[in-house]
Length: 326
Image (tube, rainbow, N blue to C red; front, side, top):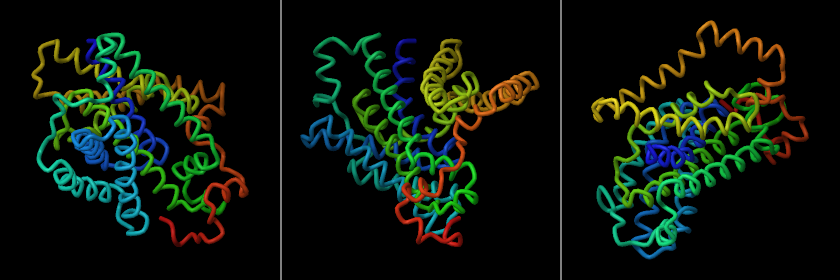
């Protein structure tokens, strides 16, 4: 069970990235499966070539960031459906990842990683690992909360909530989508680098089906803890990632075939989507919104920024025309 919790807090970084596109931008981004592996590949191959392990985290973030930019450009400038744009980038990244690693996998046995000093200090066993990775996930979550309360973050939230309305305030929604996708996949790439160093290798297939795990973490956590504020929503994603891994572990301990893990993941997502729609939960949500009407707004649908704030968020708002956005 300890291993499941460890994996939960590590993959929580990836879940935060999925949260940005799925909840904030309302964008079905499938780039995740490719950008996760890209981050792992960049980190692994860099370490084997003598690059500082801590620097590889930044490199992995940048690699994922660029992958998100490509998806954003395909969607906004190429006018390709968002779902298809993510699939195209994901497919392309498979070949790119093979090129980066010069093969299907890169082992890190015998290499110094970011976890090596922690191993030497005896901090990577049980509660020590959980505490360290939990702190990292929470700090990244708090950084994301801070960003979403900046002018740019508010404009991004408004873009996902009501794109046509926020365009009327002069916000370039194309730029907001590109930035959101880039930030999301940057976090996913960073998570890939952490996982590669944690498990000691990078593999070209390690990101396959990962979007399901990310969606399960977001939906499961927020179904249980709600989305009253951005802070609660983000922390719920982190807890949801842990709960998802624990649920998988419990299913395996119950005797289910490991080959059925993807099926288990799909079932968890279905349950997390269906249960909140049941009459009891719908009534509770209605009562909550009636008691605190601003709660729904705080969860990711803030009131639109003023024209001055919107212009500060884009820098080029005056040159934007509604016909240029999707």
